[in-house]
Length: 216
Image 1 (cartoon, rainbow, N blue to C red):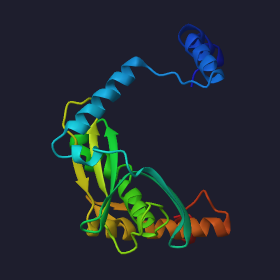
Image 2: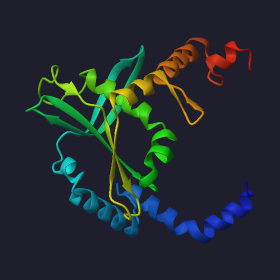
Image 3: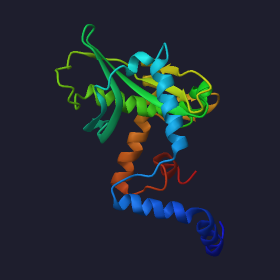
């Protein structure tokens, strides 16, 4: 939205040194990071690990960042990476934990869960766990897969972490779609139908519903 000359001038005034550092770091296989960001991240990690309610989920580093690839959701091939999977061998359950660093964790449900459709992520990841595509090092085919838990962490560390636990009903809503406060939220079922339709027809710039309704 500004001219090339103006953008170049701003780059030369404020960004050139940083750019040179990025180039030098990449050449040496390193990364540039801000010390302030490191301090904030360290503070967040400390707060989460020491929290009386969610700290228990991060007592070890087992079963972190595991991928599930090639599983199907309504005929569409999917893949995902789990931040944290916690098996309970005594009760034969498996819990998926997904921490979210957010600006406003006190209003996580409205400002993130609904706005960024974390329910869709929760449903897809839930199916990824049920697919058995993840190697946990043991047979978990008879284990109960529990609904996901999102942990909303305040990026400014002003508020303690808050858990948002999906339920069987919220998983069902994520699949079927739902209406809340007068707004309609598409479910995974409809989205997968649209993906399949777009792949078959090549129509990626209009929804199936609008196309069939002749643009209305």
